[in-house]
Image 1 (tube, one colour):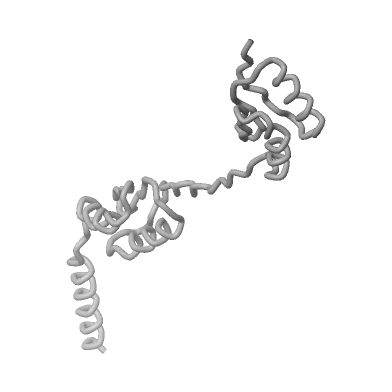
Image 2 (image 1 turned 135 degrees about the vertical axis):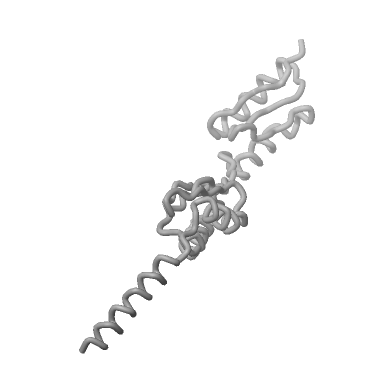
Length: 161
């Protein structure tokens, strides 16, 4: 029985000795290792305090951010990861659609075809007439276009006297 107690005590001493010899990694070393992990993600940084990695910066996508967090958690000595990083807002694709239907623009173009100096364009979603006309031509153009009832039309032509 004494022999068993001595062996148990000896095993306990070796366990405590082995545990106390275990190397604790400093925050500076963990910061260096963690910085290497996040170096693949421009615009990000990490700092380790008391074994906790504090991740900051901006990631291009949520997937990249999740991958960086997972990689940081795999660094030996990192106890946890504090996520203070953001994800860039996805650039939204804006499709520009003319507020003027092509057939309406064609009707107005046909209405002013007798006036070659007048050009029909869509500017800021509105039909706009430009060019040089006489006062009489301006009156005729306005009557013709108004009769089409196409909505707002900007008459930006120059009226010569």
